[in-house]
Structure formats: structure tokens, C-alpha cells
Image 1: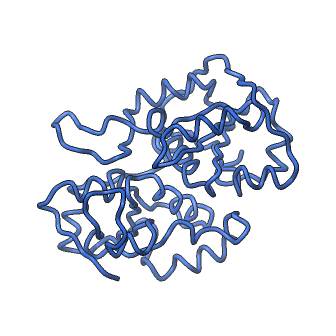
Image 2 (image 1 turned 135 degrees about the horizontal axis):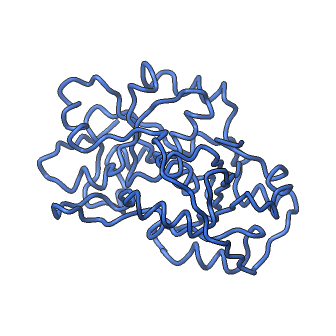
Image 3 (image 1 turned 180 degrees about the horizontal axis):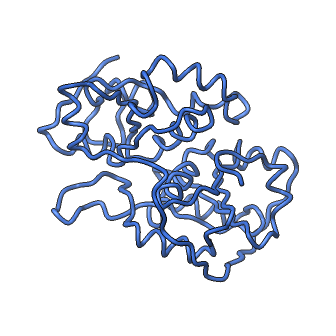
Length: 283
């Protein structure tokens, strides 16, 4: 079972295995059609397309009418139905990939763990690693017979905006922001309406999890780099702009053997939508 990362060479040996499902998570925050267009031009054999906005996210407004962020978690039942549509069963090995160093594939990795499915891994180095090894791309789509994956006990934890607000007074938990340093500081904000960060949050840009070749750094190095940020992983809360790239930090923590950190799904996009919540700027 692969539960964090898988290499391109290893994946290439399982392209036709009935019990493996491969999902292409390519996306562009500024061009929602870019992922599907790229998939149509060429993708890994037997891969299916997973749309970040539709398949991996839920309604932006909650039942109370409040904004839940740009990429809220999908309803669990809806996600299970989507996973079954991709042919996933309880014993299926799932592999997610993208062309962005795992930026979007990690979201799918986290969601599967959220509904209790441990056999999910991200292609280390993504599509670039695949192509660098001369491995083939195809254009044909290969839908699968419907699966029967069941919802099981979650392997992840989450916190709400209210939890993060309550934590402001005690700082009992450390919030870690996965956005680029300039956006964390409140500079060059082009996506959300307010620039800045949650007061007390520390910054760990998700791309710092990767080596120059686009693959994840070694476990020991990741562990060393995360160590100064918080006392223990279960005491940490991961967030980003909309709950997507925070999952990259969560994957890196898992690779490093630092398990138990929580995700704040609404992240900055939900936080800054309420003017009553405080905003910090600068380093």
C-alpha cells in the first residue's frame, strides 16, 4: 500500500491493474478550464480527470448562508459518490497527480484520508517526473466500472473558523500558513479581497517542501525544517488561501513522520470574509 508518495517508475508498472485508480488533478486558479484542457491534450494511461472546483470542493455558501471559502470541503456523501464514480473500492490503490508539484493532487490525497481511505499516494514530481523518464501519454479516456468504496473513520482532523478564533486568545495551537511569503505578509494579494494573515500564524510556503527537481525533499530534511514551527504536529493547524495547498504541507508532514496536524478548510478566504475577524500584516 502506498500512503504518501509514489515514483513514476513504480506507477508505470501498475497502469493496467484493475485495483489501481489514477486521477489527474491539474488545475489553474486563474483559468478553471486549464486542467481539463491539459488532460484532453495528454495524460497518463487510464487516468481520469478530477476537477478541483467541482469534484474536490463543495458549495461556497453554507446552510446558514455564510461564505465557507473558495474551496470548501465537499459534503462527505457527495465525495463518496464521486469516488465510486471513479471506480474506487475499499481495497483500491489511488494515485493522484498534477503538473504543479502536488499542489492540487495533495487535496485529493487528503480528502480520501478524510473519508477513511488510506491507500492513496501522490505522484512524486508529478507529470514532469513522468515525462522526464520518457513515459507515455495518451489522449483516450478510460472510464471505470462504478466502485463501492465505503465511508470509514476519518484519518484526518479539521478545525473551524470558530476554533481558530478561540485559539487567538490562548495560542495553544500553532497556525501554519502555506501561502507564498508576500501574500502572507499582505502584499501582492490578487486572489482574496483582503491581504494579510491570521494573527499569530507562521509561514511555511508549500513549495519549500520540494527539491529543485520538483520532488519532495527527504523525510529527514522535511522534519528538520518543520521542527521550529510548532512543538508537536497534533498541536498544529495547517491553512492556506482556500484549504488546497495546506494539504501539501500536511502531506509533507506525513512524509516526515509528523502526523496529527489539523486542516482549517476555509483558510484565509473564509477568514477574511468576516470583517469581525482580526487581520495581521507584515512578517
